[in-house]
Length: 368
Image (tube, one colour):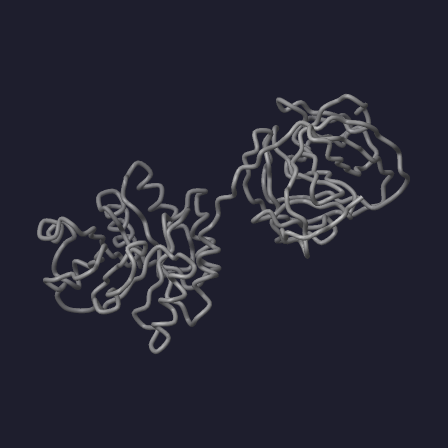
């Protein structure tokens, strides 16, 4: 989980509403220049004081963290830590050139916490700071202009900043920031499914999902005709005759099929498009969100694969009827779809909830 801080120093009359929203969405920290704002806030919220111009107050009230700019405040985090050992102190660095970038790298290596403001839109300086602090134990908090930039900051160099500070422009933006910070996806408990039948079902449209990601050999996406049963379709990472590997692609199934995205929401393959997110899953159930680059929908012969779960639940997947379209079995076995026969085992997933417009919901729903 990445840290999300809301900067309420300049939100005006909306401050109280934004503070309540921060609590509701479980924002990790609130940043203010007024100690009075920190009174009454619960201990679950990190209370951050970032003083304006002038000296840092002698009494720090309810503050858990204090950010200082040695140039502006005339004192270093280390000096303040001697006076107030119960408080965490961080250094603010504004990066505008090579010298301030080096100062940011040094702060990231040595301080408990560094708050960084990059004036240029490029993320190259942030990459340099993250690399410079690779073995450091301190935290990096980067200023973002909005939730969209926060999501980018969280992904820089695959590690990202430890947290983001954002000044909301109004009520409602705390939810967007919190969503941007929730990049981790929960692991899934895969099950072994036993193939019961396969049949050639004629022509139809199938979707190849081309992502912006290099899949691993034991990784693919979950696809199924029904929302409560899916089979793990492998990417084209494994060598094939007559054609090169395409490790970014999953030949996923007929266009009506479901796949999983964030928060276990389902999407039809037909509605995926450039910029959509899908859940990549490996044979151990580890997951990550990947971005769709494009979806290729073409008319092809189709094969229907029926399987059964240990508890008796029926699962169906309709794929392109071709030997090179594959699914994953136990231990990462790569299985050609046209060679599957009753008794073979494949890996799958059994979502527990029914769906309404893709969202999990507890209601009666019969799929067959």
